[in-house]
Length: 284
Length: 172
Image (tube, rainbow over all chains, first blue to last red; front, side, top):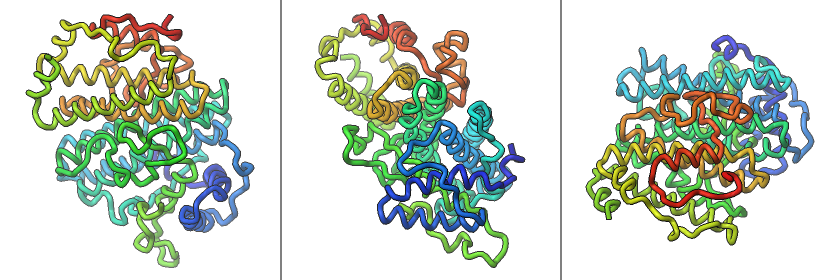
């Protein structure tokens, strides 16, 4: 696990950035600005422009969607791995045992998702080892401060991450459906994960309500509780209701996680030190 | 009136959660009735509840919450199970929009009971051997398996809450 997380290759640029380029023309001006910021980081990371892998407006293939999901799962698994470290000997050491148990349990689930999506991606002709995240993702971008410094910040960051994960899987269901019967099992697998991400999100929300007395519930009562666009118009689905969860497109999700996928810079020569970046929340 | 009698005796947070879950489910019913239109096979007021069954699941806090977990977990498996059968992308998105809320409900009830957020295999009402392989590439705690409509009807029937048979093309 750790090994695959530590090796960065250019493949992610092809897999993930293809989605960016395709979506650019559909985004609002504000979102375009966010995407351009992210693209700048990727450009500096991979030293080459993204391959225009897909025609504009095309639907991502099942293989592309699984690679995208694997990217998110690797990030989540690394997020919890870092949290477990902090719970052992860092800022989360004082967290109540119920929170530590959740961190360990959810982290194991995400590692299981990474393992199984890797196998699935191989079966679809892809290479899971070429789907990589930086060795040291910039998780500071989520809140614009270290999310592992104390239990309150960790749980808030975890809520953002898990709720976004739910919306990300939801946003790809129809794309997998469009691939027809050949992708039926891939869709089934995505659905199996989607609701478990919702369980994680709800579990973290419950801990915030009970341990921190936060004004939050396991479900989403207010669009401001999440970092993606929870409410949409032009659809018969009443997303404004707390009884209906929103979704996020691949372009929107990648714009949000782009700053996290930027590795934490060790040298001072880079313009992309974490403290100068807007928090993820400000990107939409 | 056992429903209201018992709910009123719940502690504040439990009461808040049960009221919210009920309100959300009522919204789901309204939405699904809107989608079904004249194709709905029954009206809500045609449902006949089994009074003895209802009383037994409403007898105290823990029984109420454990029943909520059973219903919500079953709902998650049910929506997941029909997802791959849907042809209309809006319907699939709507099902996804609902199923993650059901999962949140399940976790709310589970958390009040100090039960884990995710469903351990020992909680499952459908065994590995009974799962449809093509619809369940992944199994166990990190996944919410896809149950067929027939499997869902068998689970719901076993709760003894409804006198009506559950009909429809999918369970014929």
